[in-house]
Image 1 (tube, one colour):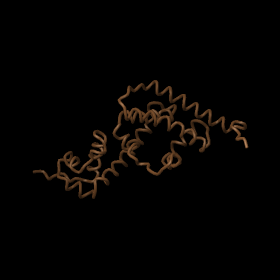
Image 2 (cartoon, helix red, strand yellow):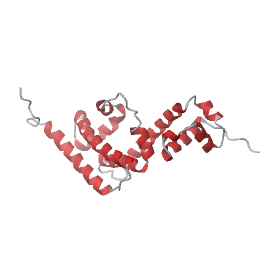
Image 3 (tube, one colour):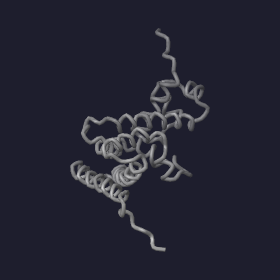
Image 4 (cartoon, helix red, strand yellow):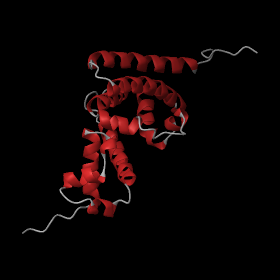
Length: 199
């Protein structure tokens, strides 16, 4: 008889990730993972002390998977911000369970929107936005904040409801918001562009 395949930490994370994708992160258990690996729960519990540790590893893998999805700009490489925004929404449509895990699992407890916008992970995206619009870093973050709120709202609606996905309509809406945010930000930075507060 051939020797039994050794169960590795990576194999456990991959199977748990697939459970999160297909059934939801709340379905990740040592028993479900061992059933997929066709083994006992012993190897799973050997590599991970708790199921929460497995879920934390799955979250990291899901985050990397989402980043790869987001940065795949083949749909519209002439307008990378539009492409990334549409990818964010497509992810919510196609990978609803992972979207719930990443953005609707209370992972950001105690953080503010400013904290999220200022995070180091966003620096590459902010740089792309600067190149595309000729904005300063602060202006680019201001525009990104407007875009993010709009895009995340759309994505959340699709992730939580069986809605009809009209990509062309969403793309046109996103283009309008993008150009409107850039225009408003540039205008507010010009002399006389900001509303003066009366004393």
